[in-house]
Length: 473
Ligand SMILES: C[C@H](N)C(=O)N[C@@H](Cc1c[nH]cn1)C(=O)O
Ligand SMILES: [Zn+2]
Ligand SMILES: [Zn+2]
Image (cartoon, rainbow, N blue to C red; front, side, top):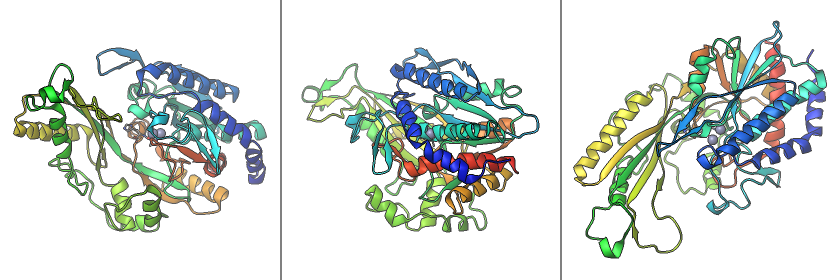
């Protein structure tokens, strides 16, 4: 019989200090998957996670997923993936949770108020890289499991944990692992839950869709080495000019993507679909003020939310090789690499997007008649995912939200990407849900990432309640 709410919630409240200390220890490990020099830290993070699962009584396999090919042609080992199990009773359903232990890059000089890898508690928030995305969310789940185990000695459902270290760079190697293990580790799974997504407001959100992401680089090279702009400005076709011209031809001033055909596959708005967005808690003016943005690209709440999650968007992320420091360096960079990505939605296909983007940029470049070398690469091609929010586990999650927060959850779609979501659902043929506990203002991927204690501790209760609700479906 389930442990009563008040007992389990009291247990969780009573262990907050310990939960925060563990998050502090985990944030201190610089598991940035995009920096090959930090691969040992990602590996260490996977080991530490494994140790905690073993402590909970789980069994853990550290699955080898091969090597990563770097842009310079070298290869390095990918971090192992955790495939763990806690309980395997025949009379109980099995839920497989997915999360990741890698983080986006962070340096204090990017504008953080404190060291990104030192968890700092301030005004009810816990600041640090990965505090929300995704160490805090995975830890909330593991602490929920711990609380149930310690109160009851037995979990209400069988639990599998599928935790990787390369999500932030597109989940390299994961599809092959699922294919190889679909008749072993990934068999006998009834539900799949991703613990890696934010809510849209203070109100808990249950997520039934996520955008995909096609991530591109454009490399332009004009000379062997960087040049003095006094000595060579006026003599050479500059790589940076070509690149900026190409990047600027990707969207118009209102964010509309100019790549021909890109909107053709976007699923048309279904009848009454717009109504789904009207009741979601999302204060446009408050968001604008919090972000320090003068004006959004769309006026109404429904339009804004739809452009955030059910229409594609294109963002330019940066330029490698460009002068970006303080001061007035007078240089002509020899080689620059622009990075941009297109968040895509059903029914867009990454391979089609890749061709459309390459054809368009190649034609733009040839119009410019530059003699420079130009190369476009699609580095990540992650698919969008959308599911039926009336699947039984969604009911369990809704009931769990009401139990913990005494409120009805918002049913939402994510603007971000879980690269493996669509693959997991397709291979396993089981219902998938994103039950995240991040806050709307957690600044994931940005400066001063944080999770609020309200979300971290409330989220721990939410996972505990969800596990219990799942058992009673
Ligand atoms: C939503 C999740 N926490 C996340 O941040 N995912 C990344 C995955 C990704 C996509 N392209 C590269 N990485 C994201 O949405 O940016
Ligand atoms: Zn994440
Ligand atoms: Zn992320």
